[in-house]
Amino acid sequence: MMSPKTRSRIMMISTHGYVSPEPEFGKPDTGGQVVFVLELSKCLARMGYEVDILTRQFESQEAEEIVNDRVRVLRFPCGGDDFIPKETLCESIPEWVANASDYIEENGLKYSFINSHYWDAGLAGQALANTMEIPHLHTPHSIGAWKRDNMDGEAAALEKKYNFNERIREEKVIYDECDWVIATTPTQRDILKESAYDTPASKILVIPPGYDDRRFFPVSVATRSALKNELGLEGKIVLALGRIANNKGYDLLIRSMPPVFQRVKDARLLLAIGSTDPSDSEVEQVAGFRKLAEELGIADRVIFGDYIPDDQLADYYRAADVFALSSRYEPFGMTAVEAMACGTPTVITTEGGLWEQVTWGLESLYANPFDPEAFGHAIASVLSHREVSSQLAKYGSQKARARFTWTGIAQQILKHLHSQADTPAPDRPAEENLAEAFEVEAI
Image (cartoon, rainbow, N blue to C red):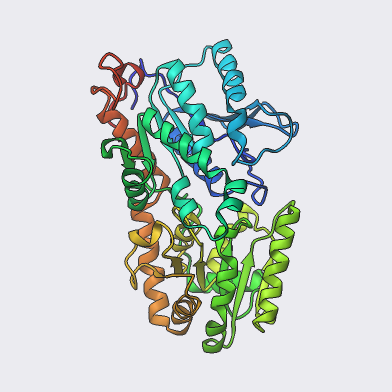
């Protein structure tokens, strides 16, 4: 429990996308990171803290929304009223910081620490941490140098779209100045240490994302069958879901399906990649996926589903026979963890961080999605062999519960801060003692 002197309010910053108590998944730049921030905030609130999630205000959004009695979303404008992509939002961050600072000062708010998410928020978080003289933990989610080096395409075009040069330069500054960087995987830790960033190992914490074990859990075989009928799904279902983006590798998954369909006659691929308000680019990408399925002669076995509402997500995982994560690059892979938690066998990409944290053949199968035959045969093996499917379902769900719950994630963060409370934070003068900003007793 916290001592009476504790400043029991925590600041989360996630500036881009549509951050709200009920996120509009499918909207641009709105996906796993929003879930991460919301769920971690709610978990910290259950531990006795009050949490403010600071984000950008645009499109006539409300300045404040209540998530629950201890968590709220605070929005501050910058850069006008239109949506701004995360790649270029950095240009408006100084205005955002000024508006947020004015609100914090006017309302006399005090915070124990700041946890910023993605590099645009990292810029904001470090500016506020410097002013408020409190610890700043930064969670990159993805890392610019790694993303740049793992993307297909012509360098100039990628730079124009993703602003890599400025991103990597600013990331370096954030990692140098913040107190700690939270890597979600050992691979991310190594990239931070050894690539363009040279981040000291002492500043890097390896803490994976979490999932809500009150929502995602296994059910009986009979219940799974009933859910499949209720959702109108027939045959062996291979499920993939998420926002529409090139890095998600849906085209690679489609190319992987012919060997699956050859080996498993009643198999179907469900791509739940719709959007509530698709952009022209998203419409074009889905049209390309449909054309690819037609060219491969498998269009009749590929189901293009709509966006899955959050309250139905767990049931879709449970109704599937295998979940496929086929990303070209994936810092972690939260959807695969949620599927594992629901007792659904998973086949995951080796172009990311999650595969190194599971045991192949026991908790999951993994393969390179750039090798369609290999990825497809991994899926087919799950669908063809009941023993394999049952083993992955059992031990995958156990791994998820043991390693990836939000409670465990929150406890790791707080435990680290508590352990440092009597020690100066890295790269801070001795007089800036964390105990002054963060006084907690063991949880």
